[in-house]
Length: 462
Ligand code: ADP
Ligand code: MG
Image (cartoon, rainbow, N blue to C red; front, side, top):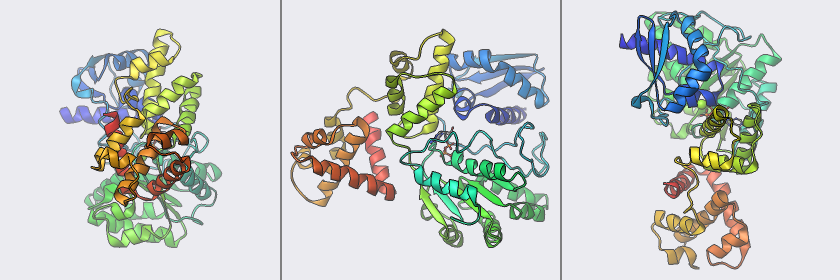
């Protein structure tokens, strides 16, 4: 019974995910659970009273409709605050739920599937979500290279950058961009065979194909793609048989000049137990390291998304939101949605005070974030003394932390270069410019350095 219930709710969430914005999905639906389904009276567990209100007021009909599509005609739905669902930051299974396109999508749904609830029926799905387009992707430092490569691929798939390997942290737009390629290819050529799949789903389908002896069917389907997009490649790690199958698929497509696009949370060399021959194939094309967009770009994203909701935000609110979320655009969208919904329900203007009251308990920029705290935390992280970091020694293990402190002051506090130099007891601000540029460049090439910077920031915000 428990499993049936979970399966039903997973199916419902899967469909809802396709019909609302990503931010709405994460904010309102992602961590809900079905607590009870008895005689078509349902109890849905939600994390907060806020989510409860929103589901009741805005999304109840959508939920009822989606349940009906899945064969349940609810007599009554109750939304109940339930602590197990209140873990809003549970991101362990990020982005792995794949669902078939809703019947309204204009794209061809290749293969079977449909609304079979058993899960036994084998469905090869295109899996593209029309909401992810180039038009609504904001370009700035951090993602511009990836954007340019994706656009080039969309206009001439299979010609350049094959395969394209995009990697970077969670929630920074990888899925958005690679789906945008698929959507653009289809809009240029509606007959193109574009397949989007997460590697986890690839693994599952491969295993099913073996189990149900439909192996040739499986192979044929993927090898018939004009553009094959595999999201979250890291999940294929350690799955030997699947890697082998993927290797053959890769070769067949590549030889036929079909486009292959892969995303992952880390570069091929850092995916443990990725077979060497796959790793070397991935290096045939182009690898791009995607990063969280800079502050200005994050502001533009907030503005654009707010405008999409028909709201114009004051600049201080935009700054606040963009500053508050430093690592993850999905979270940024989540906070914006939370703010807008809160204000909409109460008929308020989204002002800075409201935003900081509502979201303040999270990782907002703390008042104690000062140049001094940045210098101290950086010195502490590298286990060097304050005198050393602010002093004049030129040893490498002191110079690098000093430069990182400057970089973080610029990145987090947007201080001027002369001010940054003064904070570190220096007269000449060209050192600060040089340091910030150096660390910016190095961190784009060196994941270890990025990890260190993220760890220092984490401590600053702790
Ligand atoms: P990832 O796959 O890297 O974890 P996603 O592609 O799922 O991240 O992005 C998370 C959310 O942030 C999505 O809703 C996406 O539309 C949005 N997003 C990310 N980057 C941008 C951007 N540059 N412009 C507009 N929206 C973005
Ligand atoms: Mg993703």
